[in-house]
Length: 275
Length: 275
Image 1: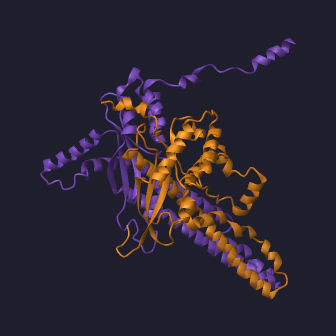
Image 2 (image 1 turned 180 degrees about the vertical axis):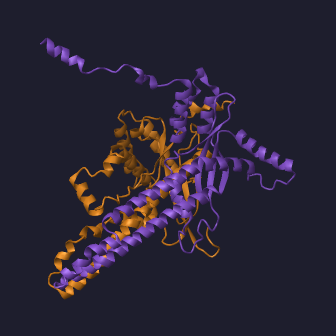
Image 3 (image 1 turned 90 degrees about the vertical axis):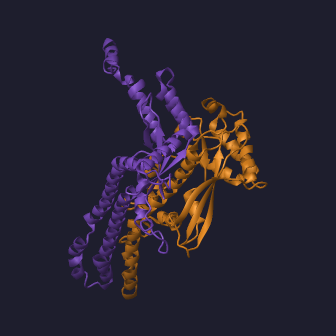
């Protein structure tokens, strides 16, 4: 099953936690690839991912055991209020729906846009081929050659291949590229409509960072967490998230660009005029 | 998922802990996890069959070590698998136009033979589009094996229990941490030589040497953009032969070097788990 990691990063004070995906939404080539795989059979004997109703598995990375317990409690309470028997507490319907909607709004939307740009790249290849070698262009360009070179029989096979064989290959190529694109697009849509969430414990890297943020030593909780996060090898998207948090709430490095620019023209010219 | 009557084979992938980081990406106190590259891995896969992948993680053991958590292991698994999938997907997309262009040339070859039998002026026809013959042959040779990567049944990750391997990693960690050398590259070279000497006695060192080789290479090789731009004459010739239309670049084999937490600095994290 396709996997996406979501990191539950804390905020200062009583503010609620933030869910950060493991990679930048712009860098979603991986999920596009899975969109392609889902809509196709990898092997003819095997069931395809669409047939076995596979979707996206979201690994919810959590900093402490208490948070996992609290997630499970919430779901059990909800079910008990309704009055149903909770047969599978691991299937957290409430949180599942909330996160699924959030994913479709942010990550899924970006993936859909990216699949369209991927299709644009394929269209670029097709246009490059059409610009010089389309079927009609070929036929119209080389049709007179058929008569001009009629007296030299050695040229006949070349002209026939130019007129018929090459265009067929280009057409096949175009068809394959278009199929490839539609498969990715369909697969991405299918993936985000079937999300399964599994919480996993990550005390030593994510838990430590969350504790540092909550501790907020000298009012620089995000900055301390940012320094620690590269050492603990959290994904770059989480590190970026913490960096933005320091720059917007604690202190900025942008003051570097606020100084007066140096005028390079005046310095040497004065010396030259004196001499 | 396989059908009940479908045979699957088990494939093992070994990931080794290396107590050094790629300093080209900045000086963090983190370490790396190394596995073989996706191409050599896919050479071991069975043809036209589903496979079950178990990734075995080997890390140092002892009292001064904080082992991997479940979430961290899952993160390593995700990184390894996404690298492999991205490689196979890139090859797949690039092979769609490449394949049909090569086919176009081979179809004209049929016309050449007709010309060869019938006329004496056949030979110059070879110069019509000979450069299509080799379009994306590198990608083709890689894709021959890498296309089988998505044919998996299940993938999971576990901690390895082979004592020889664990001893080897413990020894290498000791050797690397007690070196008096300051230069980062020389340190890596010395540990690589240390592993090379012990390969014959314990074959577990063989993968560790490969890991250090990859790490050294990733520090010394060209950047991504220099790999893509043909700036030497040899590269220009290669791109003329394999990429005549400028649309089908060669897919790079990714190195499986994954950033992980330094397991040996238990003291830095202990204060967060005192209670």
